Figure 1: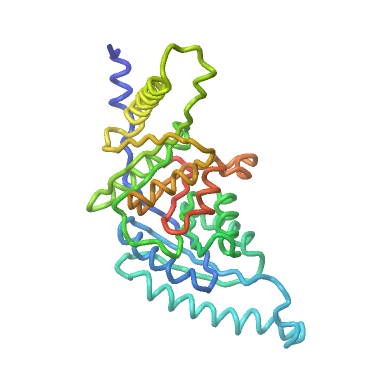
Figure 2 (figure 1 turned 60 degrees about the horizontal axis):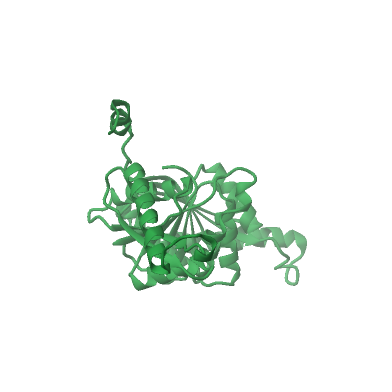
Length: 315
């Protein structure tokens, strides 16, 4: 039986507020992945309020002009001719893909330097609460930049593959019952509260079946499997009862037979027409910055179709 104090704790638990973004920041490569990224930003910001957005393109600092210009001329060519042309292209691309009706205060810039360093610096200086970056494929440079940026940035990050669909009907939240899973679940719920047509939120837990030979039990393998699954489902229910704040969430358990959790997640997502994923990542201490989480990192590598929000901060 619940105590009065327990009831008070439930009553006093703060409600999950609808998701909104004060300052978004996007990294552009001025290449093929920018158009799909900006189109998705236009779609997403039509559903989720975004107050301001800042886009940055960083020209890698290498001697591109040495064969054509002297060092003195290079400074003028690089900083004025090239950068002004790129700014104009950025302006046109953004105008084409992000509707004015979304009422976002948009700024953009071009500079020379190390792309990762400059993006991280500006994310900090603009106090971004969301960094957005596109992804073409598994191994090209922009994909590597995306993974490194997501790993090191302190705020939440949205990775948008080129093949992303403009739909938000099914949100998948892979969970392992950790505090990072709590943040991911509650962020998914907050996003759902902004949608005119609420999405289906699906919590997915991939679990290992212990080796029955290690236990002295008078049960068959099937009975043991059922017992483990039942115990897992009770933990699932307790997790959602505590952290979902009464919101409707579908529970899915998948038994893992091989050590490939990210592949199980992608397989489920593909088979069930998932169009958005929310995943928790480790925090932003100096140590944790180096380890986003092996499952999250691998999933970003193999995921070439589903936009994925990496949650680093409690919403």
